[in-house]
Length: 129
Image (cartoon, rainbow, N blue to C red):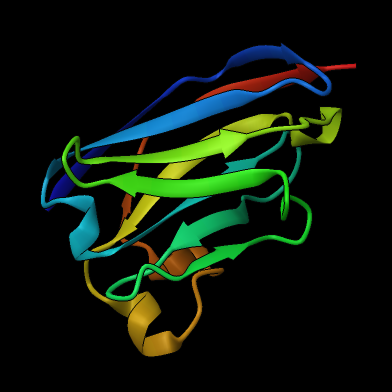
């Protein structure tokens, strides 16, 4: 079991940067796949980025590729999402997720919410134009 807690959200101007962090209690982040999803008002939660297990392969949604970077720090047991060149359409609640069951490994994809069995409470990111 693992408990996830996001931090780092806030209000930023378009073109700016924000770094989100997700702290995990329990098993370390390098022992399973983890990712970030987001949900904008009135929209469904969508995949943003993930880092896999055991190879650490990363995957990004096309809308954030080249602007966002996912990483994990095993010594601090944190997952991070560096977000650069932010756009108003990046405004959303961002959720950290973990796949302890290995569902993403066996399915071959990180992009489905249902494959992740642990979730944080989310952190709001608002990008003003």
